[in-house]
Image 1 (cartoon, helix red, strand yellow):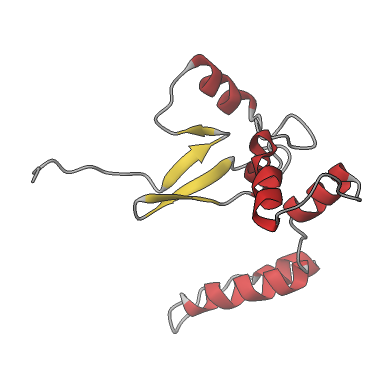
Image 2 (cartoon, helix red, strand yellow):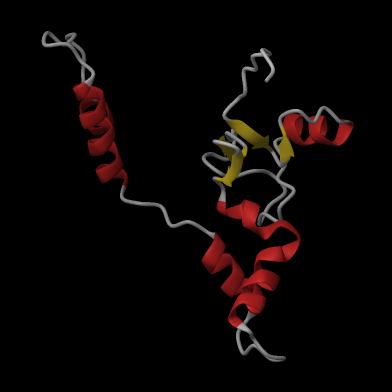
Length: 142
């Protein structure tokens, strides 16, 4: 048994490459915020268009877990695997691209619900004497 201690990052892939990959291509994708997994546009659009987070998968125990629905589009393997799992025959009567984008594109939730949930989580962390500052709801309504 090794006594070596490692500080493993929770991030597995960022902008399509493992965080340990320092190749020219990986560096270019990170610096340009590009998505290699057939996004509708060349750039990552995961959480915001101008400065996206770019996390494709995270480490969970000894396994990488995909956190981005676009990540499933890599070389369209998901379609092949789905077809094999469902024992589909020669012909599928649907428009391929719209169907694929429908199953791999998340639908945003209600912003007001998100703000309320976020505010309640922030409120849980405040001391009994909270600072005299406006809440997120107060700021957004202004």
